[in-house]
Image 1: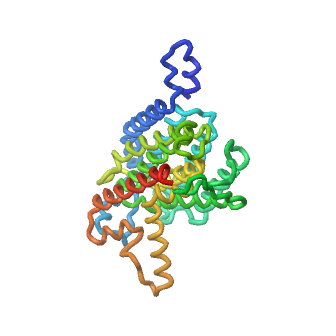
Image 2: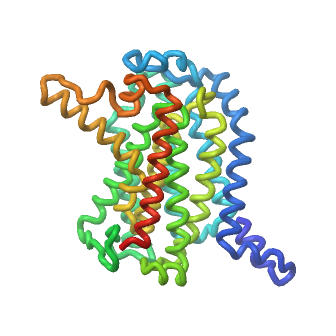
Image 3: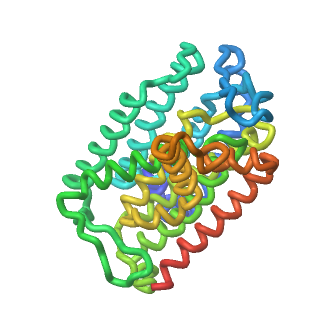
Length: 360
């Protein structure tokens, strides 16, 4: 909005020329998101407590988690406010990349909200039926893929291969199902990771920092040429969305750090995971998502391995409990130690991701 309203007035007031620069608008979006979350946080927490929107803790989990019973959930509303509002204020709203990533984020946020609503307000323990949730995720994946196929200025059905220069993978007819798998997988992986205070939101902030840097260089002809990566005109605007997500994550972490005053719920985790998946697809860095979101991948794999082991090895388990962060808790690690060590791993994965831009 600011870009459309103020940048055209540059001739009348030269200072408005700042709105031309993505770096300036990214900084503005980050700070705006942080302020919005810090202001709305106490209001939303009070509102969630008033209407008894509380988390139910499963009995088979770590004993230390039982004291979290009754903590307000659905805090993803704070995160979504901190991402969507600043993006609308600071980004170029005619940009295809911005519009599509907002669509995916809002859609999955709505699915998560419906799930949280059924669990916390309607008191349905399982929330939204798994099949219905998957249908919602598949639907937005399909819509997103069709938008890329028929509306994207840079669509070619290809994705870049990490660590290899000038090599791409042509997905052809597999592109649409590939997009659906990425969106569904990334949203569910973040959802599975959201089990400890501050864990998921801290890791997503790290991922958005990495993708923000990639989006910026991808959208600049000079930097992309120097790094010999594919130049995508207009992709730099995704940096502003990433900046808003970073600010929202930091603002929410203020209330979600141990001991958490509020949980993000599926409202936040599905939206954040879907946004990461959408950005990786828009930047043609889908395979890099596996690296930058390495901790999310490990968490998801731990659940898959645990289920397979239980079914095919006479109910034998690999881990004490899955996802794997609970395994370390039951092994004697304090919750905060697990979170900080997983953040460190997330930071290392992010650095490795950025290194792939040069190590090829």
